[in-house]
Length: 352
Image 1 (cartoon, helix red, strand yellow):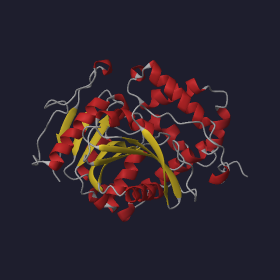
Image 2: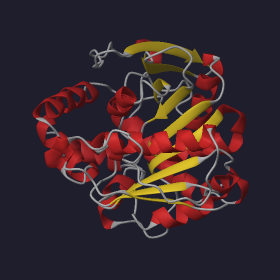
Image 3: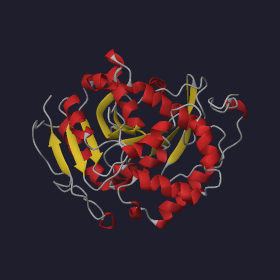
Image 4: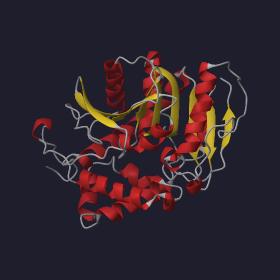
């Protein structure tokens, strides 16, 4: 094998049994077999029967665990399920080794079809935001509303802080990085991730940090971890150069579902300047900007994101007030908890 090739990955059937994935109180995990992949789906029973279904898609290197805080806050509004994309979380690699945006979107579509729950309120973060955009564009029948947190849509001028992540897409970089960081502890790796993804890493509680370290240790034992990361990064970068109807910005214009866009002012991976461009491309979208948030606002400020989604849900299911400007914490919705410091959010609604 040349130094530019990714390490080979053993067939799914002979992979070692991974350590147990953490399941938050009130959550359940179940495997869902779809053509070409076995997906792990995390669910949280709704507060009452008959609530509309919601479905969450994580970002690069993440898992369905990223959505647990938001799912808990919305259990009285939606019936939540979050997926581990192929090769991430508790889902094994895809049968064909395809980690492109199209392949991830195909897996999500097949999972939605297999559930029989009908159209969902679809959420996506980062890589998952690009995947969710494609799903909403090509299968509008499966999407009631679309909520995107720092979606990884094409940028011509990438932030310097995002370059190392993008370099994972370059052949040979993942094995090199693995060798260079072999002596790093799980704690060091987690601190690096938190510094990159959070606007204020000090918000992470000691318990949250301990859980993140446990998850990092579990992932490092998976023989396909870096392969999934590198190939998914390559698939994301490749999607940036697609033109025509397959281009993600073109597909954003095709989205018919009411859309909520959430961007963090301290995001080091997706440029904050992309917020206004996204608002122009997603017709009639609602834009929430959180100046103190980083790349994972649904983890840093889940109360604010939940409140903004409730506004979207009300507008989508009740009388529309196009062009209104609202505050996400208004009308009795739960505001930020005291330990988050309470972000100052700006919300706009654009006209299609």
